[in-house]
Figure 1: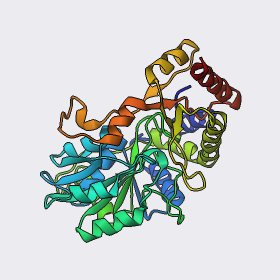
Figure 2: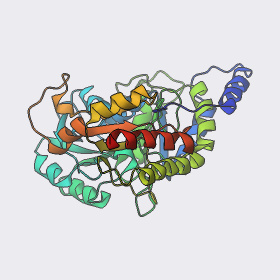
Figure 3: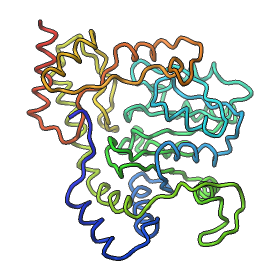
Figure 4: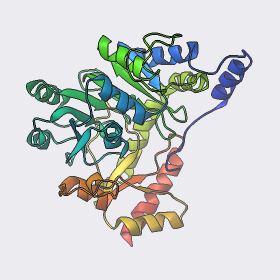
Length: 359
């Protein structure tokens, strides 16, 4: 299984019990409980859930004061939702290359990309990893240039910086995703975490039509409808109960892949601090990628090509050569990564990879 959501009888029972209560389904007490569970797990003062992880990034940046025409530095290697989230309201994503070892933003290249129009840095912690330069270097750079630091932590629930702070809680505002393949899922969904009272209050207004308060029709600013549902929250609550075990299992899966493939020079893993961080996908760089994919597919093993460089996507078509992003576009591969994988299945996948390169 390359990746799939993991729901069980607990989620089914929680939804059934809620439906027996004749609730309104729109967000209410269970949503509040889900938000509280995330806040407590991450150590954030505020957590606000919304309908998806792209919207959570959009609201995070808007609430932090980013406006149409402002520039936001984003990695050229990321899911396209990252730049799209600011493009949605007219801000301009500025693409910067990433570190070879972690696929997080290269701070030297970020520094070189700052202009008078730059208002924020969007630090994507790729696959739960943090940059080699450390988050404090990004905090200092942002402070030096009076920029907001936005943490796109869509892939990082269950990952911490070495000092024990949860990824996503260190910048001005952070964002998580609960889409189908994430470590916990509500089908679609996302959340914003922050320790800033003003940012949190503005996110809550923006997601609810700009209302000045709940249950009224007085609007203090232009807002939207990005609310959650109680059904999603029922699922999310049960998923959060399983998170600690999933974190450990994800680490075990990566360790088994690394051990099995340690002598295969054609397969190269990225740096992953397994004491602090949790891998989402099993991501590698490989030789003869398309041939390997075809060989594995013939044996019933699915893989997926990693994100291509965004500036070369048809949707953007921007000039520039970003060495690491380009290389990932040529050699990057996600191996089967589902939390449901057994050790026996991982061993079979690894044997198939070894056999391919031994031919």
